[in-house]
Image 1 (cartoon, rainbow, N blue to C red):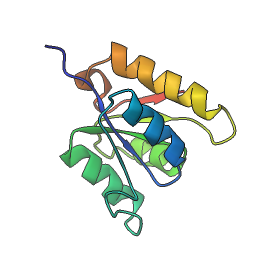
Image 2: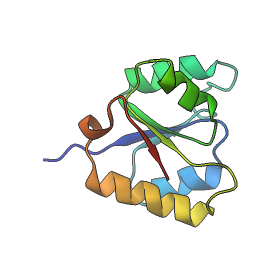
Image 3: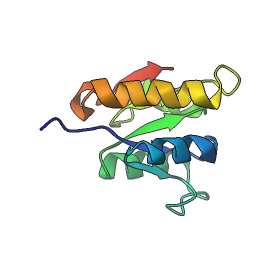
Amino acid sequence: MVEKIKFHLDENVRNAIAEGLHRRGVDVTTTPEQSLIVISDEAQLKFALSQNRVVFTQDTDFLKMNQAGVTHCGIFYCSQSNKSIGEIIRGLILIWELLEPSDMFGKVEFI
């Protein structure tokens, strides 16, 4: 059986995106529901790594951490003004349907 990507959405991502993913059967956690609001972005990446989760963010700090060589399970990035909620959900669902977690390890993709 093909392993599916699990997502972690950081605090800059609107809750409607998490709800849309949940409704479609995607395994997703969010920073607020995991009580991670007060921790650093680096600690959030470590949490996602410990849970084998790919981070979806709209925060460029995660891109900087990738450039600095921080280990992660993958990062999907979309600027905050670039796409609608529906477009983001459709993009993440497409990724979830086509890629496996190993395809994303240490990589950054832009939506």
